[in-house]
Amino acid sequence: MNRATSLDQGEPDKVAAPVSGGMKASCGPEESTKAEPSRSCGPRRRGVALNSFWNLAGQTSPFLIAVFAIPLLIRHLGVDRFGVLTIAWILVGYLGLLDLGIGRAVTKLLAERVALANSRAASSLIGTATLAMTVLGVVLGGALCALAPWLSHSVLKIPPQLQGETLRSLYWMALAIPFVTLANGFRGMLEAQHSFGVINILRVGLGAATYIGPLAVLPFSRNLVPVVLTLVIARAVSCGLHFWLCKRLVPNFSLDMAWDRESLRELLGFGGWITVSNIISPIMVYLDRFLIGSLISMAAVAYYTTPFELVTKLWVVPSSLVGVLFPAFAGALAVGNNDRASLLYESGVSSIFVMLFPLTLAVMLFAPEGLHLWLGAEFTRRSARVLQILAIGVFINSLANVPFALLQASGRPDLTAKIHLLELPCYGGLLYWAIRYQGIEGAATAWVFRLFVEAVILFFLVRLIVKRPLPRRLTISIAFGTAALLLAIVTTGLVLKVVFLLGSSVVFAWVTWYWTFNDSQRLRFRSWLKWPPGLVRTYPETSS
Image 1: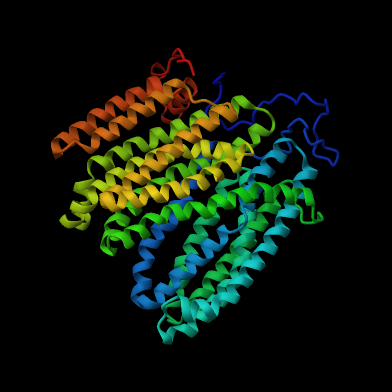
Image 2: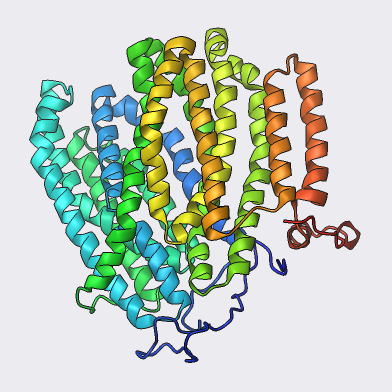
């Protein structure tokens, strides 16, 4: 494979014209379905690394705001009212995920149409998706309205004096659901155009409004209704801004197209399998806590959940990168640019490996010391080993995010959904046995084993179906890196841990530069840091 470009390459790809037909593409109404890509119709391509940075900033900034805002909200609203507010946050977030996978489908299908310069099909897709998301949002909002009395008076253990406030607040939140689903669709369209900068500016703004809006109400009222109303307004404004940006940045954006059955069929066909994964994944994420609570104790849930929530914050790294790679994969595969798809795949896996290995190694080496400083001796005794085991799972799963995205971008979301369908009963049985005989460490081990098997299957499917094998040098690097992480678990003594970390870091840096990275990655990295030219030479490639 020719490695003439790197992960951060910002220029448009040079792709060969399709074999069928000889039509020159244009942005007019006469495009063929498989037209040659046109520079004028395509998205404004920005570097994957820069877009990933935007995603990382957009996902971490709201968390930093929350650290400041949540203690103030608890102090002034009280625990009960704050609990209802968190339920409102969860309902909006989860109902937004129940979009039948249309948001993800829009990104994939629109990226393909833009790459093929098929503006008529793109406009039809946009109009159909917008209408579908509007209808879906109204249906979900109506469902929340219908369930609101039951939720506020029966399901949720809300103090009687707060039930009226909660009911009125849920009615207002139902009004926000159509804005949430529509914004998801518009965001998918912007992602297809690689407009991650503006997407994450809006994400930061919405995250800030989610916490600062309720804070702004506190000097005037402690009632939940005006607090929740700020969330509704924030989502309506966010939806409007997403719409305005689509009008400005998406060349084929139009709401004038009639409902198109073929576009709807494609959206639901792709999105349906995405929905299966969206439903099953949270079940597998939270199943361990329910089983721990039922088989051991609620205290054990705390000892397990705390390290889990801590170490899974590392997932922000792969999610930031994969969110950018998904539309890039879809566009490259649509025009048959296999070299670029392979390059993105290799660079995505290697980038996550290089970024996460040092962080994971540090977590695993100093988990006991860190937990002791943070939560004390008792938590350290019960949770340190759990944290170390879970860190390996996070590392493995982060690497597997790339083949997961590539399979979906290649038009096979059914494969990832079927993997989840098969995993659920097997994992449930293994988890039950592991918790019963090994406690919370057994739960962590079962979780890691599931992620390892899933990763092996995903990488194998990419090699078998999409024909994108990882280079052997990268596979060997990952294998030795994982072995080093396992060795870190049994390393004891602070001095020995520091020596192990320093020695591993030196070896890791050398292996990354001379073995894991390809020539284009070395050149790109040197250009970022402006290193001397002597550090970059052409190295013979190991067979892929």
